[in-house]
Image (tube, protein in one colour):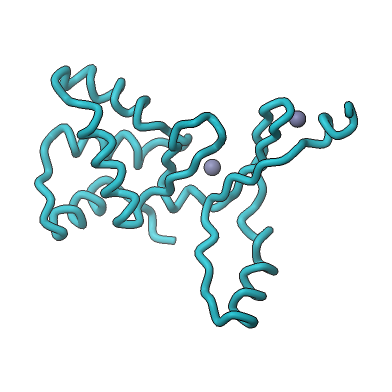
Length: 144
Ligand SMILES: [Zn+2]
Ligand SMILES: [Zn+2]
């Protein structure tokens, strides 16, 4: 997958007719250059250090644009907040234990069989990117 850079995302948002304010560019850079998942709250805190007047809804709205344009994934990993991840780094899924809260990563290929089946049986090309799968981890299963 082509790396998602802040410049590429900025150009694309501009092509879609959105105005690129310095605040918005800082949000783009902060999320797309991060190797970890970030929440809109994290980004808001970061951007606020340079632009104290930015509103949370500006940050949230920018993340929605980036999601709709296909640059970031938006996943609820169980904390009740959306976690954003650049799509080129979101080539994994998460196993989230509802017993102890442990989060593990599994490789993207775990859904290959399901994807094939959906295509063959339903003619459906499923987008299965960066899933949060809830359940119970090995330790919690042993304990119960
Ligand atoms: Zn992830
Ligand atoms: Zn557990």
